[in-house]
Length: 229
Image (cartoon, rainbow, N blue to C red; front, side, top):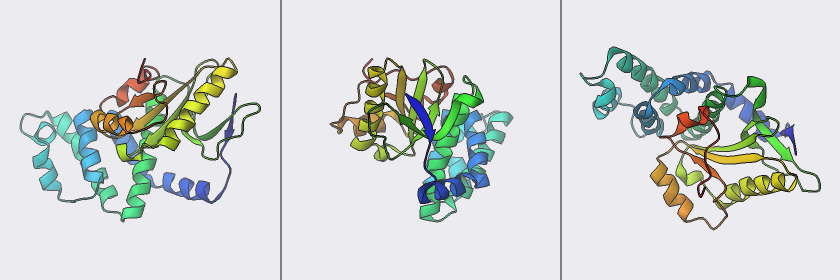
């Protein structure tokens, strides 16, 4: 098993330009420090239904209400501000930014426990005698004996059979080479929504982990447990 940079094709060029948008790093920095309520706020606002800042403050009293500490309100205000900036973009750009933000957030959370040199983006995983997948993995941890591969999605609707098959095939191919590869989905959505979506899939998922919006911080402790551990 070995890792390789994704091909420098048109997709990669577009991806790099999206990642370079200052909003991606700003949003990821705010979300790394946010609590679950702050992340739910970001998801709601970035969906783009309304940019009424006062309305969002009223909708999240635990973040902006009188009982919230000054520190909580200050940080929530930054989450709201950057989320409104994303929401204010056009539909296509907003969609691209949201995906890039989830990937950046994932990388930063993984970097809390793994050296920066081991946490990589947009990498393919190659196995002897196996045709390489066209699509790279969003985030990988490339550590000897404990590699990890993550596919990141903004919402549960992004889960599909192709993604599940690719993750499980990579894990199985690694096992065939006596290598350990933990695979998981990172979904910036409620766990219940993810489980409902997964229940509709026919692809194998028992050995694949799931990180939802409620459990993002657990990535900093170790790979997520398989869904059917």
